[in-house]
Length: 426
Image (cartoon, rainbow, N blue to C red; front, side, top):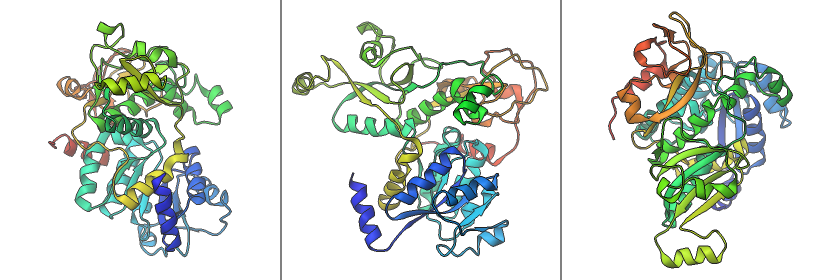
C-alpha cells in the first residue's frame, strides 16, 4: 500500500503522528494496540468515563508511566510527547496541545459531536468510528473542518469506509453502480432489547446495548446511510430490502425488476442476511464490450452485472490507514461532502405513551430505520441521533416512525449543530 512507504519515510525523519483517543472500550483498546505497532504514529492520550479502561489501553502495550489530568487548565499544560495522558472527561482531549489527530470511538452521538467540533476548532484532524454522530451532523462537521484547514473523516475499517474503497475502485474503472451493500452478521429483530440479549452479550464480551444496536438493525441503517451520504447514492425503499441471500445470489437479486431482481432502480444501498458478512459488495455493470469480455474470461461472471466483493472489514485494525491518508495527504477516507441523500429515522420499538422519555440507541424504546433525506424532511421525521432524552408529547404506536412534532428534544451541542446543518446548501 502506498501509504506504508510514506509512513516509513516519516519514521526515518523522526516524525510521529500523535493521536488522542476518546472511548477506550473494545474498539478503543484495539486501536491503541494497532497504532502502537504501525510506523510513525502513537496514541498519546486516552479518555474514558471508566478510567481503568484508559489505563488498560496503555498497560496493554507495555506503557506503565502515564499521567491523569482532570481539568481544562491541566490539558493546556500537557507536555506531549514527554508524557502520555489519561482522563475521564472527553472534553479534555481536544484541548491537549501536541495531538495531531483525534479518534472518536464512543458511539454516543452527543459526545461525538462535542469531541469532533472542538478538535476541529483546535485545528486537529478528526477520525470517526462514531458513525452515529456522522449520520446526524457529518455534513456540518466536514464544512467546519474545511473552514479550519483540517480533515474530518469516517475511519477505515467499518463497512462504510470499506465500501467506499470498493466503490472508488469501481468508479475509477468506469463501472456503473447497480447496488452496494454489506452483510449483516446477526439476524434482524427490531424488538430486541438489552434484557433479551443480556446472556448473549455476556458470552460475546459485549455491552448489551451495543449488541442490541446490531441486532435491532439500527447499526446497519446508520452504516448504510453514512456510505450513501458519502457517495450520493440512495435507497430503493424505506429501511431497504435486507433479503436473506448468499454470495451466489447477489447479482441475480440486486438488479432491477425488469431483469428479475428486487430493485425498482439502480444506484442504491442495501444489506443482506447470510454468508456475505463480514464482507461488503458491489453489483456493477460496464458499457465496454471488451471490458465485459475480459470479465467473463476472468470468470468474474457472465454479465451484464458483475459482483465485486471484499470479504472482510477489520474495524479498528484498519484505523492506521485513515491516520496516514489524512495526515500525509490531507484527504478524507469517507465524508459527506454534499447535502445528505438519506436520513436515519427513529421508529418506536414498542407502544410509547405521552411523557415517555426515549432512551439511547440500542435501548428499550426505539430502533433506527432509513429514509431518503427528501422524504424525511417532508414528513419531519426525527433523526435517530437526536432521539436520546427526547420526551413524547403524544402516544406513538409500535412500528411507527416518530416525527419531530411528537417530541420535546433535549438541548445539546448535537442539536445545535444539526440546526446549523439544516440551513446549509451545497
